[in-house]
Structures are given as structure tokens and as C-alpha cells.
Amino acid sequence: MRNINTSAYEEILDPEESSDPISPDMRVAFILMNKFTLAPVTGLVESLRFAADRSFRSFQIYCKWDWMTFNDQPVSASCGLSINPTKAFNLQDLKENYDYVVIAGGLMSETRHPPEELVEAMKELHLSKTPLIALCSSSFVLGKAGILDGRKCAVHFTIRDEFIENFPKALALIDKTYVEDRGIFTCPGGTAIDLAANLIRQHCGDIRAQKGLEYLLINSEKPIRTNEFPVLDNPSTYENTTVSRAIAFMSENLSAHVTLKEVAEHVKTNPRQLHRVFVANTNESPANYWRRLRLAHARKLLANTSSYVTTIAIECGFSDASHFILWFKKQYGETPFAYRKRRHEVEKLN
Image (tube, rainbow, N blue to C red):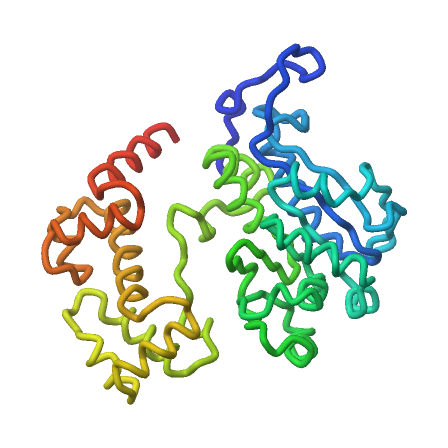
């Protein structure tokens, strides 16, 4: 682990001594179900704690969080630890004042048949476009609410069969530490630190995300999913074998000038059928998906190599640099040159 340079996070005034209130970058509400699993909750909130101020005094300044239960009564974690809510459960407050609402489950005896009122509350929050995070078995609550229909979700391998039986319209994955699909996050358990790091990185920046990883003794060399390099779906993400095989073939031929007709022939179908199953499974055409694969690969090359933009364009299957620059700016909102410059400036600061 690298030595933490506390000066990088500069000491700040006690918030109680400051006359100017600071608007937090990130607000999170934790709704704890009885017998919830402690590990993912602590991993998430401890990461928030280190990102919440620039020193190590655990003030809730730049990140804030509240503990709630659906009936405003104390609950016990699966390990027996008793927790009292710090704030009353209020749907309107949750809709208006939080960036994320986390529902924390645990023992299946509690989440298999959640209170109907809780299920209805999740439906309302979802309709209000409030991002939801389901930890451990609370995916069953979102499943009951119909929120996971047609969505990819991460579930623990021990409950996968039961989950699929109950929610056949959801796309259950067991090889992910977490999955985000259109504003719904599911985390099967574990520490949830990688989920926390990427949320913090998005709202608070790289330095405060790294601060938590270092202080929690997380190996900084471990690959972490970031918004800087969004990981496109692995072929195994999709249950449709045609889509999975097509994505694998695309990934192996990023630099080749292979046509979609050739892709279709490789997976033993025709272009029209390939388009249909891609839209049904990925919500986009195979051409768009392949372009995103190529652009994501190009962005990695821009950040990690000194290759010319023209060289990268050709290596990633674009016909010329101008065509590549056009699509890159359309996808990421900046030119390849601007992206590379910004990346290098960030690296100098670190």
C-alpha cells in the first residue's frame, strides 16, 4: 500500500465552526431490512466516510448518509448487531433529497416475502427515477416490484436458482461484484467497496475515491470498474447464444474491417436476424454495439499509449482519423486529443 499523503486531502474546518453550509456531492439513504448482511453495508458506508471530508475526522461534509428502516423500528443485522434508525422513513424526502437509495437485505427469511408496503415504496421511488441500490438478497424486493424485469442484475450464486424461478424476466448474473442497468444497481454481497469506489469517483472525483481504497487497505493495482473506462458487457452477460457469440467475435476483430454480414455468417444467422436479437437483448443495433466496443478500446489506447491518433483509429477499425474523431466526440463529448490531454493532466496531479 502507498503511504497516504494527508496533505493531499488538506485539513478543513470543523463543520460546526463554519458559518457557510457545504452542499454535499453525494447523499445516500440506507434502508435496512431485518437480518441484513453487515459486510456490504459497512463496505459502502466506510468508503463514503473517507470521501466525506478531506482529512480523516469522519465529518459528513462532502458525503452524507442516513440510516432508516421501513417501519422506523430498530433492526438486527444477520450477525446480531442491533441498529437504530437515525431518520424517519419518508417517501417524499427520499425522492427529493438523495442521490441513491440503498435497500439492504440479508437472510432470505426476511427478503423472500417482503412487506407489500415496502415493495410499493420501491415502485414509487423507481417511477420518480431515484437510483436504487439493492445489496445482498434485497434484489428479491426489487424483483417483487417488477423493477428488474428485462434488466441485468447481480445475485449471489446460492440464491440464483430461486431468483430465476421467481423472476424469469430478469437477467441474473452470478459472476459480477455488482451490476448497474439503467439506474438500478444490484450487489450480491461481499464488501461492495468496488461499487462504492465507482460511485464516489463519479460524484466526488478520483482522489477521494482513491483515498478510501488506500485507507481500507485495498490493493490499488486491483482492477476497479470506473466511469473513465466503462466495461462493456462480457459475452456471457447475455443468455442468447447468438448475441454472446457475435460479441465475442466482434471483440476479437476490433481492428479488422469485417462486415456485419460476416459477423452474422460466423454465428450462423443472417444480418436481419442478427439485428433483431441484438436489439432484443442489448437495446441497440449490432453496428452501434460494435462501434462502442471499438471506441472503448480506442480510449484505453489513448490513455495508456503514445500512439498517434491516426494509428489508433486504424487499429480500432475506423476507416480514417476524421471518421474516428467524429464518433469519439459524439460518444464521449470531447475529441481524442482533448481526452488524452485531460488524462495526462490528471496523472500529473496524482
